[in-house]
Image (cartoon, rainbow, N blue to C red; front, side):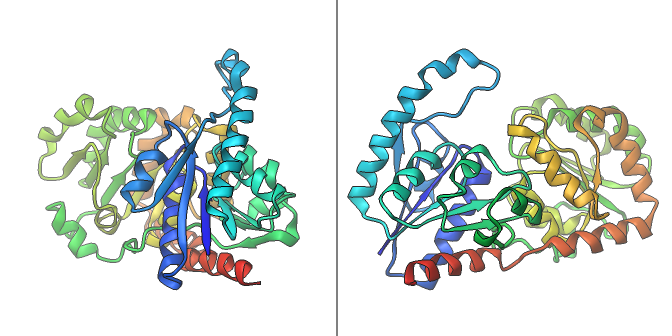
Length: 361
């Protein structure tokens, strides 16, 4: 029995697929699993590092800004369909799982044409183009957000939540504070903008840093690798209460140490934030397809489970919102309580079980 996972382009498409693949292997070790991704995509590096084989196809996404680059897209699609057919003939999979992203489209389309069951994993509140295109061909659609169900045939949907790393809990506060050499009697803010960082969040924090630190708080500020050299010098002014890092290796320790978290609104990040159950301020990235992070964030904000600040307002509003939140314990408690309603700690196991049951039926 063989399963193919297809998708990629971003970590939000790759790492949940790897988590589900690992869970399937733990439930049924004799199953073989491989991946398909886009040649040149980050999945071609990250998947082998996780111990799985990956085949590449010659596909790229639609260029929304540099529209002239789309002229070669029909030829890439045709070639990727031929490559996908060869891959399916090679592995003869029992099922194909698509995790979103343009790399999933040709493989799942050809699988459906061959009568192979296909499963879609949709992480976001606003589904991507690939999954919307394939919705009528899917046998099962696992959604990370209840809002996404309205875009799909309801009879095919299961609300599972999104897979997260097994080590995420946010419960080891004393250990987290000790790791960052912080005091246990001060509030701690964690600022993260994804592995690459977030320019608007970084500028906002830098602009209001003195005002923020005057509140006698502790701050863990992950700038992203490309921004780190622009901000690392600020640490010397508050060396006992400020940690500026290009990347945080152990996110669970950072989550655990924090009382308030500032973050982008990627679907997998939100799944983790719901589990760690902290007060959260979300600044959705505008640099994503169809502005889906805003819709992700709004779903939480509408339930008083997070504070939403549009990216364009971050530099003016973020630090003021942080200072207001620090002084309102009741609001902090309400936010942390409400975001936990979105937690789905068993999502990975539920998705893996659904996939296996579809094969066995």
